[in-house]
Length: 206
Image (cartoon, rainbow, N blue to C red):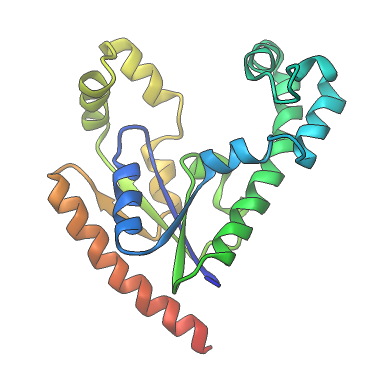
């Protein structure tokens, strides 16, 4: 059981996935909110039944799985429907994310939540600390153009679609500025791992 959970977040192209991978290499369980989001709408899950009840059985494919393309077209066309979907899925995602973290072996667990700043830290009261993988906007921009082949205008829109850098910094307890080499990111994660082990050990003795 890992009662000590660290939230891991960062903007697009910040390197949060690489940081998460390093925690895994260190033996820490990393629970990815994006993976959990897919799990909670799988067949047999209450959230999928609630989605079908709200949007109609036509939102399911013949095999009973969610027709993601159809759902996407509906919620993008109607903001009220998007809010209805979020009201169904977001609580389920957060509950499952917390459950998987608490059930993880080890001194602490990491919850990778890309949109933590957008939701607000209050939505995750069980997080003991928040680690932000931070990069200057110009570095994000350059990485998107190089990594994804995005042109400058698209890269700008992708960045602006997320919470601002200032909003992410406002919710963070720990910040790694990932504007250097991959080795520097690994070293920074390793240092925080030692710190989190200490903090988690202390919390268990309280």
